[in-house]
Image (tube, rainbow, N blue to C red; front, side, top):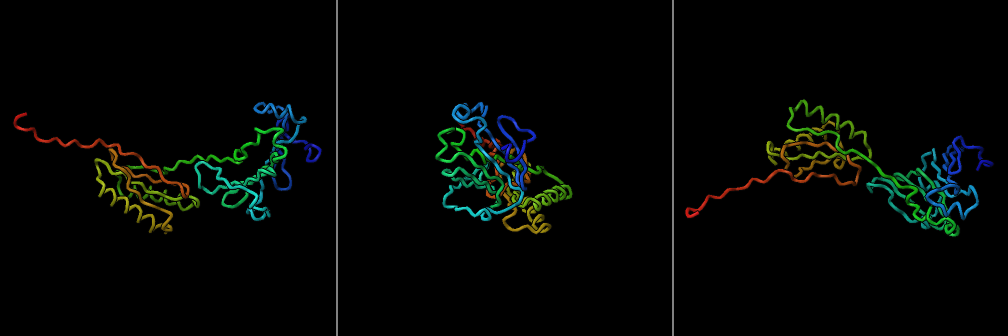
Length: 250
């Protein structure tokens, strides 16, 4: 690699990084892979076991002219169904990661013919493209509020929802001891109508949900990735125990 691209600024016996013609390449060598001692013992010193490329240009998968029939398709993200797809060719040792069909990453690993030399390193190529997405769905939460205060909160939520192209908004209203289910529904509908009128959201961009009864009334304003079901709290209020009159002979 040094002969081809020169010395990497942070090169060591394990990896090197290169920026070449608008692409960033991350290279992993067999030497001193402590978790995979069989690699360094069975392969020549500094053998390349992985090349990971991150294109700088945003190109669709079709621009790479691959035969998709050779690839198996996986969803590499957690939570799933948020736009990521992995295309894996185990035979030739290549995997493409796309986000909404734009290629974000390409990994080249051992082909079927060479995999026996260092089998564990590339036995699950899904791990090369794994995406764990942490998100905090609750943008705001409040109880009984004056309309002017609630409207300011809704405006802030509406602005964030409008700028979150891949998200869906949920107004989750929880009835409580202080606001019953019917009144909670009315308040939730008022908030929904206000946001839709002001921000002109598509009908599938924002949804109202009346959640299970809680000890106190609350409104949650949430942003979730599309196709990810919103989380609802379990009912927490203690049921009222109806006391029957005692019989005369008791």
